Image (cartoon, rainbow, N blue to C red; front, side):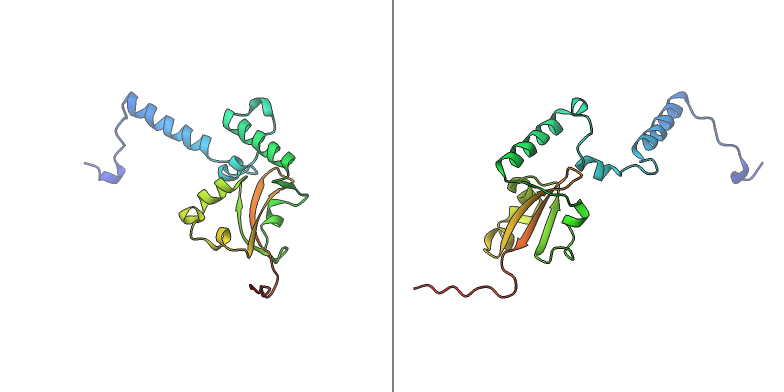
Length: 154
């Protein structure tokens, strides 16, 4: 007899072969091609054609447009990396990419932001900015630079 490492593998049944082929094709479909945006970033970007958009993304794009018109989201010429950079904006304390309103922002923070200084303190303000790529960035900014003003109550 031949040693086990030199023996030929047994033939797979038709069912096992189809299962292996399905798994291999799924891995190929899920893997991004070179130069393509990774899947987690692709979910944040709006699709180029509105006619091909799924229902949830259409609804989300409509909400962003409504909030832009009302002035809750401001449009900028900056990229997402520039909006999220504390070195470019020294007042930046915290940011979340892809949040278009306070509800989504609270969902991403522990305890829905109940015990968070970002929502409870007067030191911070929330700012929603639309980047030139079409991604909304929610940012917490310091209201006061340096020392907090001394308020006197009578």
